[in-house]
Every structure is written in C-alpha cells, then in structure tokens.
Length: 218
Image (cartoon, rainbow, N blue to C red; front, side, top):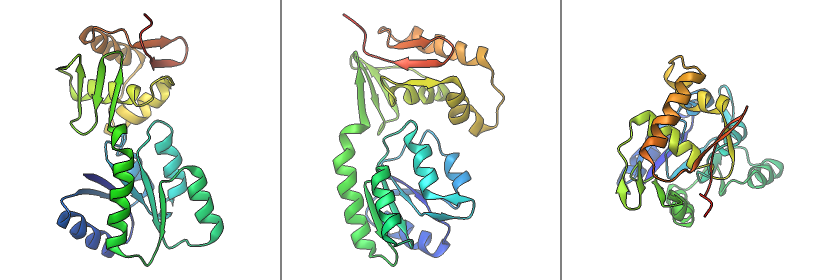
C-alpha cells in the first residue's frame, strides 16, 4: 500500500514512516500544501492529511484532490472542534482522527478505508482498463505501451470517466508540476498518440473545453 502523508510535524512523520514500514506500507510525505499539490495526479492508495499547514489548510487540499480523484482521504489533525470535524466529513473525507492519536488505531482505519476503496483502483471503460496499483493500462487483457506522460494523461482522463477534463486542468496537474512549458498543440499531439494506441474510441474532444473519457456507443 502506498500512502501520501501531508504533515508539517517532523516527529510525527518519523514515527508514522516507521510504523507504516513495519506494516509493509510505503510512504511519501509532504510538509506543505504546495508540495502536496505537486504530487498530482495522486497515484496513492490513501492520503493522510493534516489541516493546519504552513501555506494553507487540509480542507483546501482535499478539494483540489477531489477535482479529479476519488483517492481515500483521512484527516489527522489537532483541530478537534465539532464544526471542523463535521466540515471534514461533509466534504467527503473517509475518516477524521484528532491528535493525540493511537498509531495502531490510525493503521486500522487506513486498512478499513483502503479495503473499502480497493475496487476503485481498477477502472474499465469499453474494454480499456486502468490499473492504478500497477500504474498500467490494458485493452482486452493486453498491456499498452505508454510513455510516462501518456500514462499520466490517460490516467487523469479515466479517473474522471464521464466528466469533462479541461485543458487548463491537464496543464496544471500534469505538465506544470514538472516545470515544463506546454501549449495546446503539444497536448493535442499527446492525445493523438494515445488514441492511436487504443482500439476503442473512448477519448472524446469537447470543443472549447477539453477531453472526456466515455463508454463507446454500440
């Protein structure tokens, strides 16, 4: 299991890294909201988010994640007032744990939400399957040969099946994090390359907006 930990307390990070490793989990941590946003497109099994961050709050980060991902999220925070707990759960968080906390309890809750959401790690659209655990895409059982950027782009689209993903969001979540300049023509070229590798015509162009993955009509 791969966990994203967003926490600015290094003592907590060190303790959780050890506990996660003891349970066979890998962990990547971020000390700020900005650093966490750069982890897009968030290919993790669970995210554990603090609320009070140096450059923002976990609620804002949760909203950014939910713009295009159903990644299970647990808030782990010292903010224990009723309004904040209710706000976190109403936003759609899978759990809300207040500090001080039991590491064993946190791991038990991580296992629970991961098991509940494990089926979401595989998305299939008209014979095209995205396996987030393997970071791979298959069509009718055969793995597609995709470059890293092609995989990230198709993964982003398939995790938003039925929804329009704007060009601006694609630029922000895939290319901007690497600091590379990209324009509309570059994106169009990548979409064409992916389409050529797919037999099923699942990527639709939504004029003036972006792209959408949808089931192919019979």
